[in-house]
Structures are given as C-alpha cells and as structure tokens.
Length: 398
Image 1 (cartoon, rainbow, N blue to C red):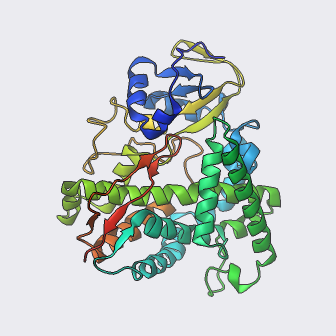
Image 2 (cartoon, rainbow, N blue to C red):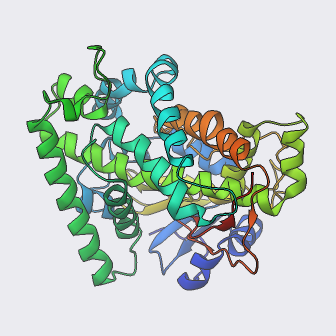
C-alpha cells in the first residue's frame, strides 16, 4: 500500500459536496490515501494527465473492480491491443461524419418531438421530463436498443452507476445493479435476434447500420464483449448527457448574466456546455490499478494498489483555471479533462457535444426563452464519482 498521507473523509459529506475536500487535497496532499475509499486519490491535474497516459503503470484492467464484477469487462477496463480492437470496431459510428450525417438529424427529430409536448406556462421537472428522455432517445439509437423505453434505459443506467460507485457495499444498491445488468443482457439478446427486423434499423435508407450493436457484431466481437460494452454505453451514455444537459440549463438559469452573453452573441452554447462540464464534472472520477511499483511525488505505489483519478478536482485546479469555483462561459476550457485525457478519452464525446450544443440547448432556449426556476425551487446536486442535478423544477415561458 502507498505511504502517501492518510486523509479520511465522510462519504455522505463528500457526496453532497466534494469540492471543499478536493481543494484541501490539492493544496496539502495531492496524492493521498483515503481509507473509506480504500484508494489513493490523485487530485492535481498535472499528475492525473501524465498518469492516465502511462497505462503500463496505471492499468485500466481491474478484474476485482466493481465495474468488471457487476457489468463485465468492457473496453474501458482494457489496455493495449484488446482496448484498441474494440474501440476501432466502434469508431465508424462516432467519427464526425457519422455524427453530423446520421445521428444529428435523428436527434433533432427526437428533441423537437419532446419539446412539442410542452406548453407556455407549464411547470415541469426539466431533469426527469426533458433531459432524461432526450438523452435516452439518443442512446436508444446509438446503441441499437431501440425497443427499450427511455425509462428503462435511465433506471438501468442509474442502477449501474450507483452499483459501480457502491464502495460502502450497500446490499440494496448491489441487487438493483444486478437486476439492471440482467435486464440489459436480455435486451441485447432480443436485439441480436431481431437484428434483421425493422425494429432494429435506425433508418430505412439501406445504408450501413452504425449502431454500436451492429458494429460490434459485424466486427466479430463475441456476445459477452458486446453485452459488456452496451452496459458501458448505457451506464455512461445516459446519465452523463442527461446530467450535463440539465446541469447546463440550471447553471444558465442561475447565472442569467452568462445566458445573456449567449443571447448577445458573445459566447455560444458549446462554451456553456464545456464550462459546465469543467465546473461540475459529470464524470468525477476514473479508477486505475497499479500494475507495477511506481513512485510519484516521493511516494511509492505498490502493485494492485487502487488509484482514483479525480477529474472533478483536476477541472478546478487553481494552477490551470483562475477563479476555478466560478461558472464563467468566457473561460478557456481547453485544459479541462471532463471527457478524459488518455487512450480512454470518451469515444462518444462528439455525440454528446452534438446532442447538447447543437440541438438540445439552442432548441430549448429558442422555444422557451423566458423559462425560469419554479418559485421557491430547491435544486439538489449530488455525487462525487458521478455528479449532477437530481431535479430541475422550472416554469416554461415562450
């Protein structure tokens, strides 16, 4: 085990607001062992970026990790050739041309249909009634699980996210996660059986099916691998766009001066989205396993030690971002690592950015430009491994 300084934390407080402790760690113990997490925590951006690229030491392969145990070994938990093979199989569905030519028109159609269900003066929870289904609509198309409902995908995603961050070993959370993964296995099996049916096709053009399911099957990947990567997509591909979309709207509504900058043409939706993902990182942490003895900052890490790269802390690192606790869409976010920094950089980043920046945010604020938070609204923000708003009560106004 590492000899880094020991800093214990209250997990309930950490879930409610991790940023004060992370700021303390950056200042006093950038590499620290946290007993309640049984992991060595990296909190400085420079250490994280360098280490994430050093896969020979900081391995993504974690056979004893919660993700592997609960979801199967997906490409995010593989290094080298095994990771490259699966990533390469999926790339045709995530390159810019596929995003713009195939997914964007479909996303646009889905989002407009969701907005058509709302009316001027209507009170809604924008998190559950808009951000959740538009994220799930996109996920259904990209994965190929078109027969699944948005509600199913969202509940499965949350159950898996809770399960793989269940470091306290709560049995109820474990069972929910197991039920979700079993349901996804069943959905994948059904989708494979129905592959030639119209229900599996995302368009009637006869062009190549660029869904993840089709691409992996066409590449000859085994069904076990297909299931594991679909679970990865559902876990991250639902909650992260959902949380980033709802969170960006919340940030703009609570910082009206920032929203005005967009309306005056001084900033764009992409700047707001990128700044939100820096400010409140939807993916707050990424775990690694130490593959061989390694020293950093004078502390020695031993094989099989568990390391947590705290992206949320890196994105508020004062060495890189002035006034890092502030939401400022004019900020240069180029050094933020909301989508990762190494070989496991999020393959779906372009899809997420297209959905949020080119479709959801501009269409929503065009349709309901005078939307405001509901009177006496209490918006809850929670999480540390994954963080976001849990509700967003608003009143829509055209």
